[in-house]
Image 1 (cartoon, helix red, strand yellow):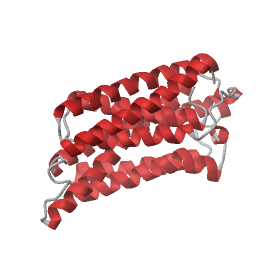
Image 2 (spheres, rainbow, N blue to C red; image 1 turned 90 degrees about the vertical axis):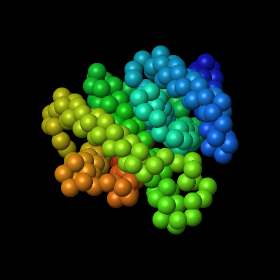
Image 3 (cartoon, rainbow, N blue to C red; image 1 turned 120 degrees about the vertical axis):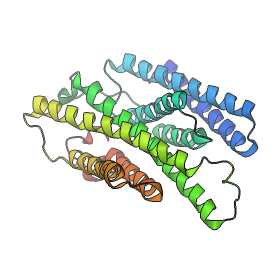
Image 4 (cartoon, rainbow, N blue to C red; image 1 turned 90 degrees about the horizontal axis):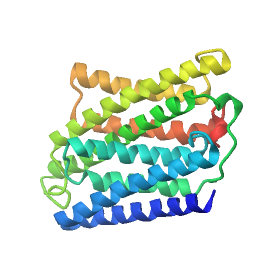
Length: 275
């Protein structure tokens, strides 16, 4: 990693940490000026993440998304910009607090895996690489928003059920707003996840002569897709709402995390190049 790239990454960590701190202070104090500062810091983090990805591209000569470090950074980047695009259209009280901490945890995780720029394997030398991997991780970004919304829903529902309106009640959105957030992010994430699987199948046909090999990561990607398909189907046909939808959003995100990390380190397969 070059000195400039290293400096940008350290800046990303620092600015994101400040954004988390600002959002946390706002969560406690509810002062709008602090919230505005937190939003500016998170947007700055998104810009720096973009610059870091571009610096990795310049060093590697290909889309920097083929190692665990790069994949997690791209995951954080996708989550950041998914949130910023969501925030541009909708307002959900204190949503940024939960999302900023998830982004920071992803970036911290990426700091603890090797950051060396690796040579691209022959099977990956295709323009399908940025299409397939990029779209898949963009899906993960929106699904991570649904995960955060699910956590917020469960916290708020617990406050309401206890009938003792405590610390979180006044700081979290209504259950209806959180359910709508879940629906929006789930739908967007599912569309991108579907496109990721389709593009991966087309790429596999060109690289290995078959659309599907039942590789562990392919299998778990399909399992994750079915988990979200069930959520989409149940929500729009039999009216799954509320706590059930929130729990499913959290379970779906657990499948996403296992597909991204668990399969790579535990099951291997042709996608184990990202170890």
